[in-house]
Each structure stands twice: as structure tokens, then as C-alpha cells.
Amino acid sequence: MDIFLHKRTPAVTFEEVIRDYEQPLYWHIRRMVVSHDDASDVLQETFINIYKGLPSLREKAALRSWVYRIATNECIRFLSRRKEQALTEENAFLAEQLESSPGVDLSDGAALRFQKALLSLSPQQRTVFTLRYYDDLSYEEIAEVTGSSVATLKVAYHYAKEKIKNAIIA
Amino acid sequence: MEKEFENIGKKMPYTVPEGYFDAMHVKLSAIPARQKRVLAFRWISAAAAVVLVASVAFFTFRSRPQETLVSDILADYEQFLSDEELDSWVDFSDNDVFLDLMDE
Image: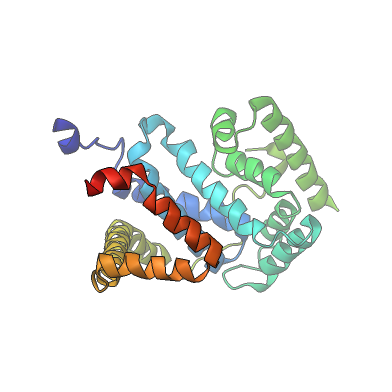
């Protein structure tokens, strides 16, 4: 009988996750999908999945990589709905959205160029670069998010950085 | 921070509407209540479907007495039998040892 009455206390409450990760996850998603409206939709989907999966989270220490993994998967799923487009077309579409959608400050040329360069990367490279550069995740945490090895991620980050540097100079 | 990008840092050209995060916080906080409603609706829909199927089955079979149902099936079956087949069926019934035992 006890088994029916016992309900495991989650490592962290949903309210705490919203408080700590609402904004970081929004900006992570925004960098991936560009449009504010799309980012809002993906953010809500992400939090629905976080709510559903929270009871199975055993350690609070794993929370950060876990929530970023859910958000990243939602971004990839969202982007793959337009999969019929080739990668270059997809990147061109995102770059166009960057300049045409509301909620983008076009006056800061340097920041705009940097984001455009970021959008020339593949979604996987963009994920690695933004998680490391903007969100300060360790390579070990990014490995948990993406399922790749630390060595692969280091190489991917290096290539992404070089690609951005070249795109800014060009 | 990479020294190559020092002048840009973490600056982004993206902005959000005024009060966006406050409004989003309210929306996200409502997820547990919304999910519970969705779950309750699914249970009710599933239960309603079971009741509907059970009711249809109950009223369908209750309206036809069992004997009528069996005799109808036999009548339908007999239509497809030839005269020779019917004769052999009758012979078989007459010589059935188990039926004879039951008659005794």
C-alpha cells in the first residue's frame, strides 16, 4: 500500500527551474531560431517537456545540461520541420529573418555581423559554439547536451570560431 | 571570452517586447495546471470511449435472443449447402454416437 502513497520529491521544483532558466533558455533558443515569436513557441514547448520529465530527474547537479538538452532538441526539431530546404538555404533564411523580423536592433553593426556569422554555421556547430561562448557551459556539460565526445566538441568549437572569424573579416 | 571577439563580447542584436519575461513567467507557471487539465481530459475521453463501446455491444447483443441468433446463423448456412451435403449432414446427425447417448 505504501508504494501507492509514496511520491518521490523531485530534485528541484518546476517553479525553481522557471526562475533560474526562463531567460537563459529563451536567449539560447533565440540564437538558434532567430525569430522572437518562434523562440517563444519553442520556449513553451521546452518547459512543457521539462515539466513532464522533472519527476525523473535524480540529481540537481545534472539540471543545467538536462534543461539545455531539452531546449536544444526542441530547436533542432523546430528547424528540421523546414528540412526540405538545403542547409545553405536554411541558413540564408535565418540570416534574412535576422534583418527583417521585429525585435532585432539593426543599428549595432558589429553585433549584427557576429550573429550573421553564427547563422552561417550548421545547427550542430551553432549549438556547440553558443553553449560554450554565451552560456559558459563546460565541454563536459555540452557533451551531455549533445551526446558527442569532449574531443569532438573541442574540434567543432575551434572550427566554428575560425569560421566566424573569417566571416566577420570578409 | 575569446580574445578575438573581445570587442563584441556577448552583445546580441536581439530585443524582446517590454514586459515580455514577466508575461512569459505567468504563462510558464500555468503549465502544471494546464497539463493536469489535459491529462484529466484524456482520462475522461478514454473512459467515455470505453462506456460507448460497451453500451453499443450490450444493446446490440441484448436485442437479439441467443436462440434466434444461432438459428439465423444455421438458416444462413443451410442456404449455401447442396442437397447432397444436406443429406450427408442428416446422416451424420442420425449416426452420431454422442447424440444417441444424449437421447438415451
